[in-house]
Every structure is written in C-alpha cells, then in structure tokens.
Length: 383
Image (tube, rainbow, N blue to C red; front, side, top):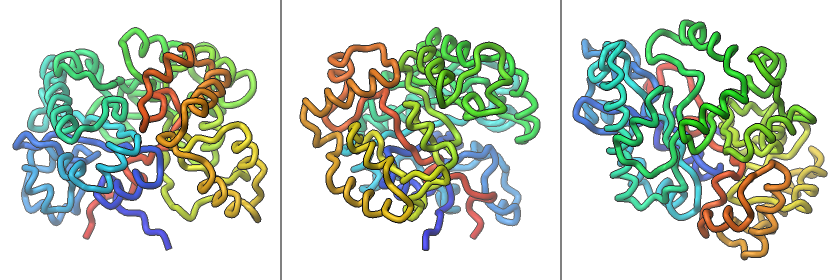
C-alpha cells in the first residue's frame, strides 16, 4: 500500500525524483541565512508547537526548523538518492523561490522593490553555490518565483542557471482566496500569446503556466486567441510558443496524457507507483524525457488495454533505452520527431549540441513531482 509522504520532505523528494523525470520544490531563507525547503510563509506545524515563537519561516533558524522535521537545501543534495538522480541521471530540479510576507523578517515591507530583488538574489546566489559544490549541471535546474524582478535578481546574483518569473504575478501575502481574487483580473487580461511574449522579452528560459490556459471552460476566459491541448487549438499553441519549454501545473490525471502529447511538461501531485492506468484509458508512462519513446514504442503504449497494460509497461521499461544510453542516431531520431510534432525552432544539430549525454534536451516534455511526491494537507508536519 502506497503512503504519500508529507510534501517537501526528504522521503517525499527521494520518492519523486526516483520515479519521475525530476522534482519541484520550494526554498526559503532562514533567520541565520540558510536555505530550507518549505512552501508556506508560516511554519507548517500545529499551533500548539509554535510555543510562542514567531510564525514566519524567516524568523526561525535552520536548526530549529530541522528539529521540527524540515529539510535544508544542503541536506537534500547530500542525500545519495537525490544526488545521483539529479547529478548523474539527468533529472531536473525545479526550484521555486519563495518570498517572505512583507511583515516577516527579511520581508522588506510592501513597496521596497529593491529589497525584494536583493532577497531573491541572495537566495539564488546561495543556491548556486551549493549546486556548484555538488556539481549539479546547469541544464538540470531552473529557478522560478512569483517575483516581478526575477531578471534583476538573477543578474544581481550573477547566476548562469535557467530562470523564469511566474506570471500572472501573485503577491506574497493574503490567503488563498484573496490571492486568487488578486490574480484573476491579471489572468483575464493576459492571453497565452501575451504570456509567451512577456517571457521572451524578459529572457526567461521556460514558461511556467497554469492548466487553466489549456482546458475548457477556463481557456476561453483570457483575452486573445484560445489555445488548448487538442486539434487546431493545440496547433495554435505550439505555433505561438515556438518550442519554448512550458511547464504546466497541476497535471491532473485526467489531463496528464494530453499535456505530454502536446509537448508540455506536467507537474503532478500523483506519485503513487501503483497508479499505472490513467482515467483517460491510457497506460501511464512516467519518464517521457529520461526514457523517451520513439514512434513505434509510443504506438505500442497507446495500444495498451487495462487488462494488458502492466505487461506492456514492463516490456517497454526493459526495452527502451535511457536518454543517457541512446546512441547518436537514436537521439537524432527522437529530436527530429519532437521538433516536427511541436514546432521547435532550433535545428536538430543545435538541440543535440545543447544536450548532454545524461540530460535530455531542455525542450523535452517531462513529468515532474510537484513539491516532491505531491501537495499534502496542512500542517505539513503534524506528528
């Protein structure tokens, strides 16, 4: 029986990076200038255990947070399971940088953009130093944040790793309801074309994008051309993005197959290894980038029935080489197939040269574990 570990914890991250093409997680800065993996602004433990301490994560030392069961960024990279998958096996780490509440320590107030930029830059710089120490390849990471000054922060940190801003922007204050109210008008006024244009103008390395842009009825709400995951709307979407890597969340099981078939990367909350048959009536392939299928293998996967899909998955797992095991001719075949299907603009040679022996092309669609093995209930640490 599968048990889902709490989000952003070591066991959750170990499981997800072993199962999928990569893992997404959140980092914050502690009061003693260390990096901790934690999503919420407030320390996610029962109120009874706060014991009079300030509720903001940034007011706690790393040691105090570790004593509650939270994980440091360094400890994550020291773990041999995570390290080998991230460094040697070409899997990707999507690092979401979290800004503190404006009233929290290091929060910088509500209107000090320079302080906000500097705070995010300091996090990037610290993360870069740790990633370099553990020799994590640049192409295996991306930073992103709900932060308008992401380009400035990256430049300030002198980072050479990929980055992107999360748009429409969500402020680091208010509850989920008020944040959605704030962001909704921005969503309505920001078409997918505008989203791509903004990211290209900023110099983003990829496009983080909400699922609402792709599925009805929400995809009809933003101004401009409606895009989607099927038919002409899919063709329009790939024509607009021109191969810009696009990461979609949440990749719910009902949409997972379509997201990957569209050449997009999905962030999933379902890391149950026993979940092998999608509600759309398809076998689930969890490594589209690390263990990519050619046309013939994809057809075999698509032919699977609920009765025989486990046998077909087992066969493909044994027969399909990892990207790191592919010879040059197979890599050219795969890149040519992807380029034709999804309107990638760079030449096959350019894409091949920018890829490493262990890491699939930056543009390749992936399935990535969201917050490790998926979002979990609050408080994250309850025991």
